[in-house]
Length: 302
Ligand SMILES: Nc1ncnc2c1ncn2[C@@H]1O[C@H](COP(=O)(O)OP(=O)(O)OP(=O)(O)O)[C@@H](O)[C@H]1O
Image 1 (tube, protein in one colour):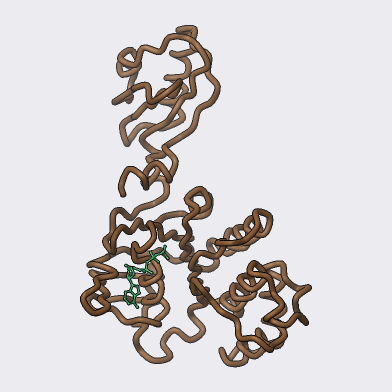
Image 2 (cartoon, rainbow, N blue to C red; image 1 turned 90 degrees about the vertical axis):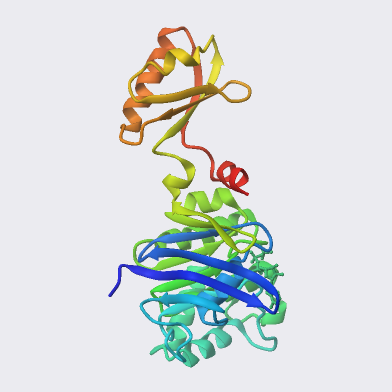
């Protein structure tokens, strides 16, 4: 068994003359929460659909949990998916629908699986509710419960928190965090703060191509950069570059000092050295944060 849950090698997907995904390669380690990032039309949903086996690549090779998803039945029991615009059939009670889906998936105790998954997404009260009577957020969580039933080793969630109120979105994020290490989760979202909080690593797509893939620490430069919010006092950046391991220091906008350091250095040591130097120079500090925000990196790339 490979350590990788997903491997994409040079994947291209064309719809007639339209190239939706263009030569994309990246891999997702087992047990990781992995983000798919990109602006509207970047190719995230198309990539998801290929991972689920709903669409086949025009070119390239795709391996999902060691199998080719285009092989009929190959993903059964291995993958749970929440499609972007999942629509529930009307005329069903939520519990009965999930139980029916669990039966179709061949799960041994369908009703138990349905109850457990509904509980996971905080929707047990909706067991007897008709699907057409669900709010948008409740319908989304029902669709998510379907993806979680049977605890499949790989869970693909296309925009799981879109349209949810803040409290429910936080609950969904907690469900994803709880899966970390036990299941592999791929999640797409336009909420970059959310992905930064959730993901171990991510791929950034733009116009169908891969702009960057890496660990969250690599994407946000956590091992190579930090910011100091200055309250008062005179900062002289060239003085800071004489400190060990500091490779660059500059003021970025109002009161923000950005310091870069060598990749082998221990962040805590460099940060302490720079802060001590600033305090000795009479500078007062409001805060220190490692790396840049994921949002800054994405805006810089796209
Ligand atoms: N079935 C299709 N036929 C033709 N073009 C398509 C089809 N599906 C997607 N596309 C095009 O492929 C590109 C990528 O679409 P995709 O839905 O994968 O983007 P996305 O990153 O998920 O966008 P969003 O954030 O808006 O959901 C877009 O230009 C889209 O118009």
